[in-house]
Image 1 (cartoon, rainbow, N blue to C red):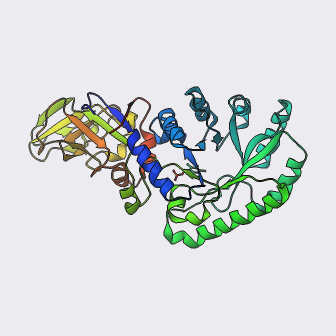
Image 2 (image 1 turned 135 degrees about the vertical axis):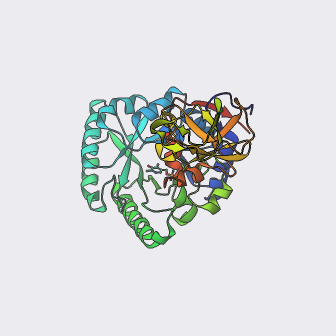
Image 3 (image 1 turned 60 degrees about the horizontal axis):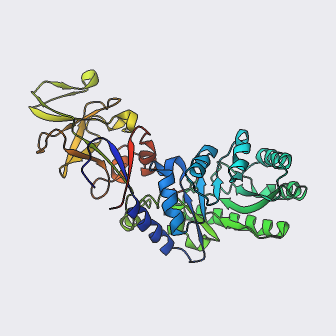
Length: 370
Ligand SMILES: *Cc1c(COP(=O)(O)O)cnc(C)c1O
């Protein structure tokens, strides 16, 4: 890659492919992969990522909202797309763009059947979501009889899959709870199989589920964060490669005297003469204000430069007193080796999911292979 000349988020498709191959090496050959590309592909570029994954053989894509599914269709993606959290106001778009809704409540089931009937749909694919312990979205196991009754009365929809979501698949201290969730899911799937009398896909593992509970992979797994290079533990992170690298440049260098203050509200005072660099990236771009005042850092010419003063809307200042650097030099905010999104997010008690998806659409995405 040429050196950055402005703030960019580089998306390395070779790393994505490596991660896909690693994850599929951890599941059976016959298990399908649903690639989760919600939230702009975890902050990267959903269409580029989906195109890459489709070529590698991903069977399904998952998005949170209908608009994200539309974006994939607009980008030419033809793979089936599961919309995890649709709203009934978007049912028209769902059907027009061949998106497949997760149906998680009687309210949604009734409304979607009504809609599908009004559009003369036959066997429109739906995905039944069950709550097995996360207590976020989903039917309970006690809803099955009522679901079956409603489905028996219509030919407009057909259950394509049954799924659930684990509450703590990354936390091995919660193994007992997770096993209970998995058993509950198994009971639900068996009961539905008996009542529906046709086969459907079952899926309940996210990335950490794949890595920690491979016996419950069923016919499909849903992987998000692993594709982007993070495995929710240090050991797995070593097997994966971060896809996104956030870079910027030095706009200006300042020489400060002892007693000078830095930035808004004079949040920091130079305790000795120092050199600072001002960078064209701020909280608008996804650099949380919590990183201000030496909590966060960037890397310049291989050396760590702490963020000094408050994070501004469009800029940060960093301490480069001990770094040989010039205006125009490239700056790494996060990437791989020594300054990952994992490490930087941990500094403010956050997680890579939040840091990656916080990088705002103002930051230019650059697709590359390296
Ligand atoms: C976001 C999401 C996933 C992906 O989880 P990762 O931990 O990123 O692999 C899977 N399933 C559901 C229901 C989700 O909302």
